[in-house]
Length: 155
Image (tube, rainbow, N blue to C red):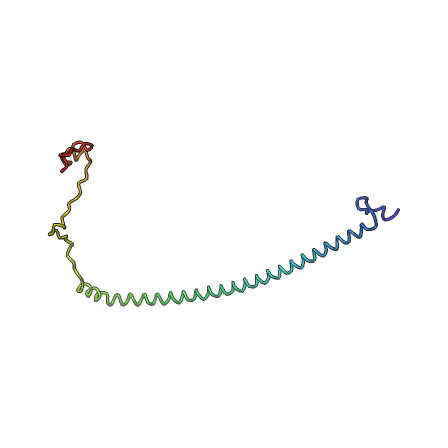
């Protein structure tokens, strides 16, 4: 019994070159896989660089936030001081300002529309009633049938 007899039939080649072809195929696949490995390594290096830049920007942003919060606290204290000063001055000079405002006020009489000229005719409220009620009160004039207006009725 030989070594070739121990290999199962589907794995046996049909000549001397069968094993060589498989080795060549596996070497080509190995080259492709090594190329993929190098590309993956480059991609990982770029991602690590991006991550480092993102961490740096995050640190800068956190410093900016801390600085802005400190500025807000300072401005809040300053605002409260100014508010206190304003209220003290308002309490001190409020009556004086009110007295000056009352002394220098401008009074205007109520508006009265002049109706002395013919172009300035006084107006009355508009009488809005249903047509049947207006006709019953005689407010529509001599026209009794709106569909038939006679020439003598129109002046």
